[in-house]
Amino acid sequence: MIPSGARVWIAMGHADMRKGMQGLALLVQQHLKRDPHCGDLFVFRGRAGSLVKIIWHDGLGMSLYAKRLERGRFIWPSAKDGVVALSSGQLACLLDGIDWRNPQYSWRPASAG
Image (tube, rainbow, N blue to C red):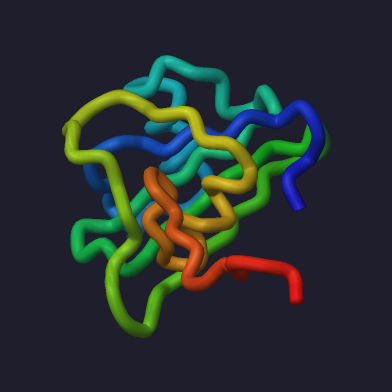
C-alpha cells in the first residue's frame, strides 16, 4: 500500500540492479535531482527488464522492495534519462506486468441481464 501523499517516480533507462538502498538513494539524489528521503517512492528497472527495485523512506528509515517477473518485462518509458510520475494505480499495473500507459480490460458486460 502506498502511503497517502507519496508520489511515485520511475527512473527512465536502466539501473545497476546490484545496487542496494544506499546506491539507489545516491542515484535519486545525484542523477534524478530529487530528495530520496522525502517520502516518495522511486522505481528502478534493470537492463533485462524483468527486475524492478523500489526505494522509499518513511521518515524513520529506508525500505527496499524488489520484484522479478518470471515471464515478460516491465513496461518502461523509452527515454534514457529523467523521471516519470505515476499514480498508485499505474504502479500496481506496472508491478503486475501490465502496460500502465494503456491498461485494457479483458471483458466488460454489454447489458445487465
